[in-house]
Image 1 (cartoon, rainbow, N blue to C red):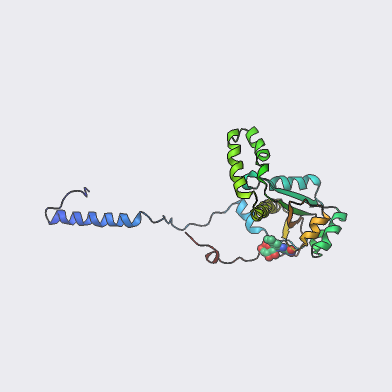
Image 2 (tube, rainbow, N blue to C red):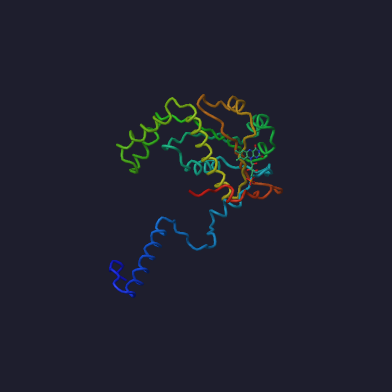
Length: 246
Ligand SMILES: Cc1cc2nc3c(=O)[nH]c(=O)nc-3n(C[C@H](O)[C@H](O)[C@H](O)COP(=O)(O)O)c2cc1C
């Protein structure tokens, strides 16, 4: 249909009216986001892993994770993203009876500390932009990033963090939290329970485990084979209560 033609009689006028209506509809449709027909929510092994995780309270106290198993968990954990690839984290694996006995009294005496095979002290380091070149060197070496981009990452990192203690600390907490989350879901995929914990005396942990002045014990994370009695994942607030579209 040629909508540019001028209507000269009643038939052509009807065509012109139809064209005008179609153009108005097109105008109203253009800015609207498309709404595909509702379909069953997709699922897969990763989604099932996330949906089946719950905080483990009861661990098998006889279970042991080898240092290699612990290294594997942390290696996967460190594949989590960090701002400017800072990797401003560190992990202390508390796994001997002696070390667990030092940690438990300064972690609200929570039994999981001594019963879980390992408790990680998840440490975030204050974001320090001067570390950017060293962190990016292996990325350049691997041929992923051209060397001339390194200063282009360092400069905005300096603008963001230099002389900004609150941002440095915020980034430490973000980094540690992403790392912990990756370990949590890796552990789950290996059949291990886990619980992040804020129930501890941060100053005492800092002192007892010799953290550096720029290090924050962001959380403890117990990991290990579970014993019976743990609750399943608790119901969450409805998505409608936590999601806004913009
Ligand atoms: C930051 C943080 C701190 C937590 N601290 C503790 C803790 O100290 N002790 C504990 O038993 N559980 C702790 N939890 C576990 C929460 O209680 C648990 O994740 C929450 O009740 C939801 O349960 P679910 O993860 O099994 O669904 C903590 C969780 C988070 C994310």
